[in-house]
Length: 117
Image: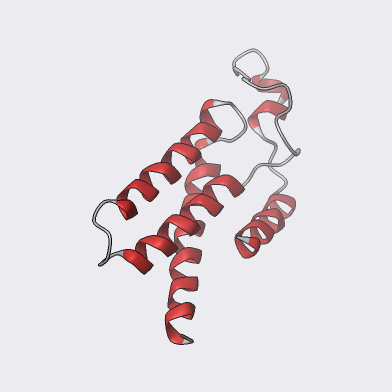
């Protein structure tokens, strides 16, 4: 998670795309469900990235051992990701990009763990 979190921060400050809750053009349209919406920039979502990285890593690790747990992890990661859009702190592309990066990171770390253990 440290890897995905730091890469996410690098992307946020590189692209400098405002979160929907910080965009003045969206003030009349957005429904903010919390008083603090996080940092200024939101591309891409660290919550989506971290949750999908963990879900894919454990899915790959336990795919043959547990029947339903890996699917539940993916559902949980999807719900966490969707919640970021619902509460108004990320655009859908932020979440989709974070999920894709998280999936790739989870698989990469699974591959590394299998290679060296």
